[in-house]
Image (tube, rainbow, N blue to C red):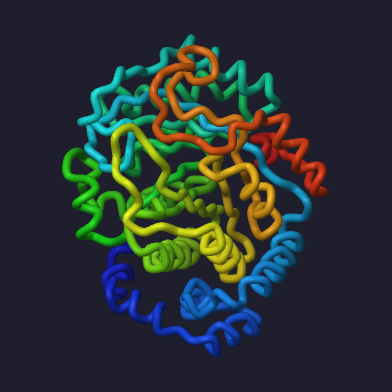
Length: 369
């Protein structure tokens, strides 16, 4: 069993047409429903929902506070390597981008970790390019062993792996894996990933199934907003989440919604998403699913993040560096993408407290499981 048959049963153009055909009456019914369906979600992300944004925001805030209280998870990415064997049109680490490549040693990883733990972090997201021979499973296992004594929660955003590889890394302390499809539009996916293992659309599409079978504690989904029509892409994310929650019910889930940001010499977004539309999407996800965690990165501006955290967000990054060694070892190396919110973790935590939230630096503890 995999998501593939479910995906094939929902042709892109038919899904897109269905979303854009939704009416204000459909939106009103979705808002009044005690439990919302994927059809309701289509209405909530449709253009017809724009006049209902204030009502959606208030309801999203209420549902989030009821389920998650006044807590906000803080996390930081730790970039281990910018080496990559893929060509991706939107990424600063792309193989055809002539940049200095760097992969951190165990000593350098610990130097980076010391900065993050000094800031208070107990939750770290390990990030690499996709270069299996350089930053393959052995390298990742060593990184996890190196960091496990220093962090309560180890997450990872790296190349998709086989089920057995995930099972091995879980034994090394891996708790969470983020794997973004980038876009569910197969033809455009090929345009943006012309070379490398990442060009295999279906292998990437089946990655969450491999994670579920391996018994991962939590997985994160999402698309890169700007590659294709965001409404259609995000419906497929919701469809994928719905399938995974039914198949792998013991796993927790999170969603992210990164908007395409400038990177070294790369493309501009095909489809621009306004701030109001991103708010609409965040609220629509919360109204569809009261349990899913929603994460917002430093791609977004301080002003936007300060406002939107009250509308459904449950975790945010702070103080992020998107280059290997960016915290201590090599601060000037090339970033994967530009960040917008450059405030320190302490400044972001202070902002959260002013808004009545409790910053949570440690997601959970292995002693509890």
